[in-house]
Image 1 (tube, helix red, strand yellow):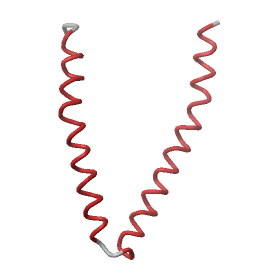
Image 2 (cartoon, rainbow, N blue to C red; image 1 turned 60 degrees about the vertical axis):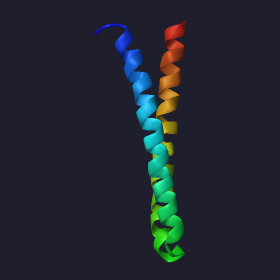
Image 3 (cartoon, rainbow, N blue to C red; image 1 turned 90 degrees about the vertical axis):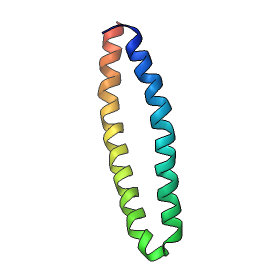
Length: 74
């Protein structure tokens, strides 16, 4: 694969993915705002729980990664 293709794919991805993510996020927020609070509460609490679990996993993995990269420097 030529050197230019990864750069081209990265720029193409940014041009397509960024507006798409913005549109989907706007759509979800607009839909959530138009719903009664009793219907949105369960989804909001579930998303908060998933976010907390994923961040806990990321913080757990970051310590071994930092230790192994420090070993490589010396």
